[in-house]
Image (cartoon, rainbow, N blue to C red; front, top):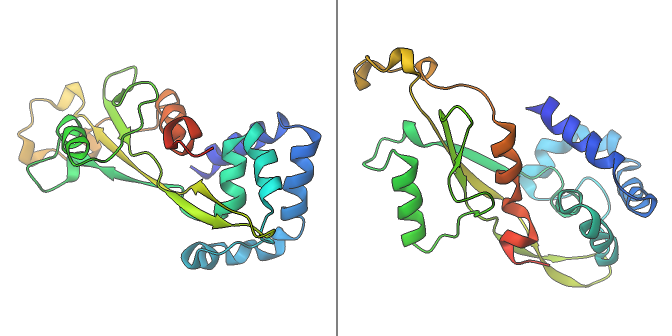
Length: 198
């Protein structure tokens, strides 16, 4: 997972303008010395770089909502994933969970459809839309910014194990791995098109 995030971050940074790079450099210049405190900063909801200005946030948001999200959320948890097939409740199918969440007024990410299905059909995913928080910037401006979201995944039993009784099915009998096409759509859970935060 770290490799994926690192390569995404690297390819993203290569596509940014000089002004966006200047903003990132301004806040991350001394961050390498503080990165060892990343888990503490995440738990405390603090940044390991100076509080950004609203203008710097807007510069990044125009080019990369991901970079802007990172600027204000730092090392905070972007999302967590719940394995729906492991839930010990009457709702252990993702389609049932999605219906329950929507009936409860929880907004789900609609990018690419509410339910994202892997090419092989074995990995089913959905996610909530990120909550918004009011963020007070260094210059005193306060505005809503996207926070974290919840992803849901159902890994179906592989065809060669469909003969097993459900009581004998183990995690290794299920579809494993990561689906890039789904991940791109799930990651839109923090985007302005989903959250309405601009």
